[in-house]
Amino acid sequence: MPNSHIQHNDEINLIELITLLWDKKIRIILTALITTLFAAVYAFTAKEQWTSNARVVEPTYAELGGYLQLRNEYSRILGIKDDKEKKETEIVKEIFARFSQLAQSADEKEAFFINSDVYKIESEGKDEQEQRKILAKLVNEAIVFTQPDPKKEPNAVDNRISFYAETPALAQDTLKAFIAFINEKAYKQDLNDFLVLFDKEIKDLKHEQQEITQNLIVENIVQLNNLNKAYDIAAHAGIKEYNKSFNYNETAAATIAAANAALADSKISLADSKLNEGLYLFMLGEKYLKAQIDVVKSDKLIYPPRYYQIADQLKQLEPLFAKAQSVEGQSCSYLASPDYPVVKDKPKKLIILIIGLLLGLILSSFVILLSRAFKKEKA
Image 1 (cartoon, helix red, strand yellow):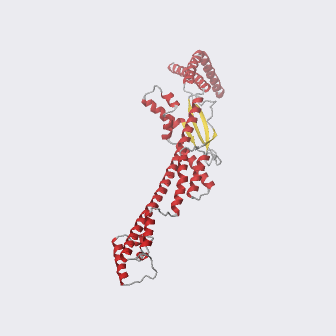
Image 2: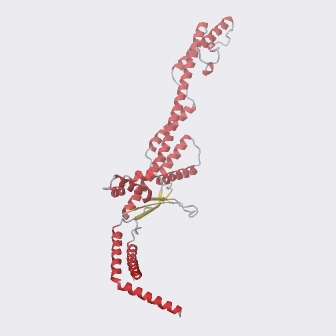
Image 3: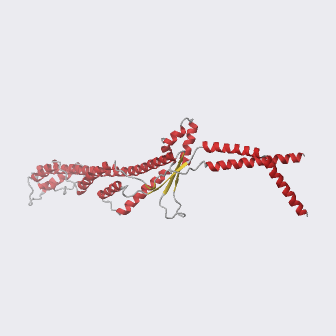
C-alpha cells in the first residue's frame, strides 16, 4: 500500500508539472522564439570560415631538369666524381626540405601575409593594435602545415597545408599564393647558395692561375739575373764560346771565385732558379749565354699543364655561371593542389538554430518550475 501511494503521488506531480508547463506554453514558446532569433542573428552575421587544403611532395626531375643539369655540368667540368643519380636525389630532397622549413617559418609567413589580399581585406579600417592581432592570427592559426606521423602513416610522402578564410575563393587563392611564394623562395635560396660556391670556385681558379703566372715571372727574373751575371763573368774571363777542352787553371779558379762572390751579392738563392746549373754557368760562353738572355727577355712564359687546365675550366665555367643566374626550377610539386571548399567549417547555421531553440525551451521551463517552487515554499 505505501508503494502504491508513492506511485500515485508521483503521477499527480508529473501531471501537475505537465499541466503547469502547458498553461505557460505561450511564455515558453515566446522565450524559445527569442533565443532562436538571437541564435539566427549570430548564425547569419558571424564570420564564415572556409578551409582550403593542399598536399605537396618533392619536386619531380622534370621540374628541376635545368637546375640538375647545371649542377651535373659543374661537377663534370671540375672533375668531381659523384654518383650522378645519388647526387640528384640528394639535391631534390635538400630543396624539398628547405621548402618545408620555410613553410613553417613564422617570419616567412609574416612576410607573405603582410602583402596579401586577405590581410588587406581584414585589416582595412582597423587601428594598429587590431592589425597586429589580425596578422598574428593569420600567421599562427589560419595557415597550418602538417607533416605525416611516420608511425600512423608510414607510407605517406606528402606534407599537408591548409588555410581558412571568410570565402571559399579567398581561402583557395590565398593558399595557392602562399605555396607559390614559399616554392619560389626555397628554390631561390638553394640556387643562391650554389651560386656562392660557384663564384668562389671561379675566383679560386683565377687566383691559382695568377699565382702560376706570378711565380713564372719571378722565376724568369731570377733566371735573367743569373744569366746576366754569368754573361758578365764570361766576358771578363774572355770566354766567347763553350769549349769542352776548357783548361781549368789558376785564372779560371780565380774567375770562379769572382763568380761566387758576384752571385752571392745578388742575394738570390740558386735553388730558386731552375736553369742555374751551379757556379760554372759562365763557362757556357758569351754567345750561348747571350742567346739564353734574349729568349728570356722575349717575355714568352712557358706555362705548366695545370695553367692550361685552369684556363679550359674557366672557359667553360664562366658562361655556365652566367646561365645559372636565370635557370628555373621548383622546390615542391602538388600531389593535390589547393581545393575549392564546398562545405564551410563554421558557423553551422542549422545546429546553431536548434541549440537556440532547445536553450529557449529549457531555460523558460526551468524558470517556470523554479518560480512555482518558490511560491509553494512561501505558501
